[in-house]
Image (tube, rainbow, N blue to C red):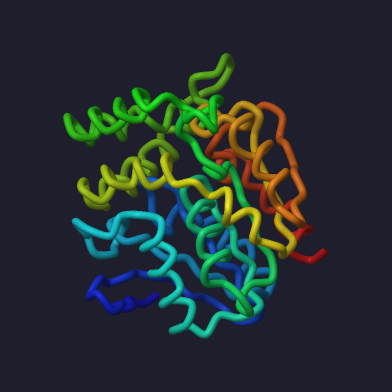
Amino acid sequence: MGILKIKDGTEIFYKDWGTGQPIVFHHGWPLSSDDWDTQMLFFLDKGYRVIAHDRRGHGRSTQTATGNDMDTYAADFAELAAALDLRDAIHVGHSTGGGEAAHYVARHGKDRVAKLVLISAVPPIMVKTAANPGGLPIEVLDGLRAQLAANRSAFYWDFPIPFYGFNREGAAISDPIRTNWWRQGMMGGAKAHYDCIKAFSETDFTEDLKIIDIPTLVMHGDDDQIVPIADSALLSVKLLKNGTLKVYETYPHGMCTTHADVINADLLAFIRS
């Protein structure tokens, strides 16, 4: 584990374990690198070097009031990648982290990245616009901001229910999973998390996806209640030059946690392919 102070003074917390080909994990909102514990232990055991960082304003990184946008997130990671001299890396991004990973690979990752994986990821763009009529209405996103501002603790206690599909018929709420989600969320900064809603929902990754030409696996559950598959994965794979889509029937947004055994095995197969 370590902390890198980047050029604007922000401190970025990161984990860097093992040796071998690096696999970089980009976490979702409003979580931290801890959300990848299961994947990091799995791939460390398989002989890979595993890296995950807390995005600015999240987890143990600086609770920034500024720079909470995709351009800055990607630039922050570019500094970390250079400091750690990451080459031939596989980047795995979940949800907001998928947007961050795509933005980094397209803008900064030349000669450093071998493959990309987008899991339940926000690209191409979440918000409803004239060019994206199937997106989420801005009122839904404004509602998230209002709930966060009014009572972030309560909002984060409720959000894991649809995130993990615990509201589906026959599903049981896992208190440890729910509490760990809440713990990670409350570690971060309220201002950064508030700003990040705009970053993950209104950033248009279309041009990033068109630029990326490395092998890219797009993984998505068809019962994702947070980032619906029809306006994300199904569109993203059409924009990628070398993309492959894998759809998981009935899987929720947080499938890396609820179905880690399946997701890890499929990730390993793609990485080894």
